[in-house]
Image (cartoon, rainbow, N blue to C red; front, top):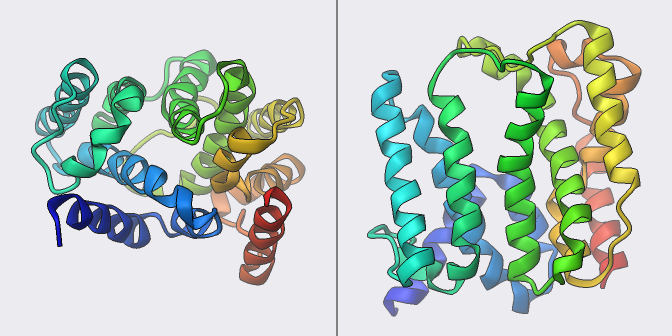
Length: 253
């Protein structure tokens, strides 16, 4: 097996083990496009894990800085990171700057301070989920004019995932919500839904949104009953989740 093939296989294995919902979304995509997505999502997973690699914030931030430097170098020179998934990232040079911005935003994850305000929280979601969704759309060939709509959908999908993770984040001693009052949580969910409803995409841009297939249902639950956020009860049935993914994938094809 070549270095590139081994690296691509490592990317797919990482996504399967560490982000099963995104793995399912990629597998629901056309087979010829999956190689464009495995490296992107594997790199995102490594970035997301870096802040949690140590209980010492400074050590965690150093690990994150490694990815910032490696991705900025990839964007500037085309040199791939010295990492198992590095060879597979060669074709993502144009998206490496977006991934570096994701890593920069993840510095918040290294510490335990709350977000300063709602604007800071929304900026975090745009720089993490928004950048990731736009990077995926660009890797699939989306037009520049699709950026705002893709980012809005990415924000909403990121918000849905974040609300679902609130109990786990709180168990780790983090303060995931700048305002945890039920009415504030419900308002956040409605804001995410409003961004999703404004998106009307097709082709490559729409395909890049597939990993957020559960977002609308999750945000609807949070908007209707914000207490479900603290209870960790935002997930739907497994059958419903898989059926909705299949429907969306078939519709896009």
